[in-house]
Image (cartoon, rainbow, N blue to C red; front, top):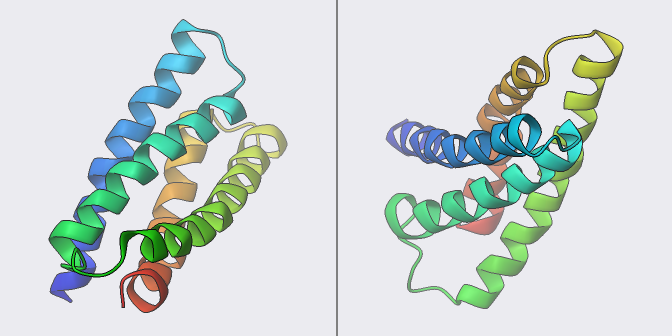
Length: 123
C-alpha cells in the first residue's frame, strides 16, 4: 500500500508539471488542447520516471536503457488513452479540457500507470 501511495505522490508531482505546461500552451500560446496535453504529458512523464526510478522503486541499479524502453512503451499507451479520453470528454460531452484532463489523469494514474510501472517497468 505504501508503494501505491508513493506512486500516486509521484504522479501528482508529474501532473503538476504536466498541467502547468498544458495550461500555459493553451491559455498563453493558444495551442489546441490535445497538442498541449501531449506536450504536458511528456514533461510530466519525464518527471514521474525520474521519481519512480530513484525514489519509489529504487531501481537506479538496473540498466537505464531497458527501463527507458519499457517506460516508453507504457507511456505511449498512456498518451493514446489520455488523448482519447480527453477528446471524448471535451468534444463529445463539452466538458472543459482541464476538467477532462483531471478525470482521465485520475483514472489512468490509479489503474493503468500504477500497475504497468510496478509489474512491467520497475519490477
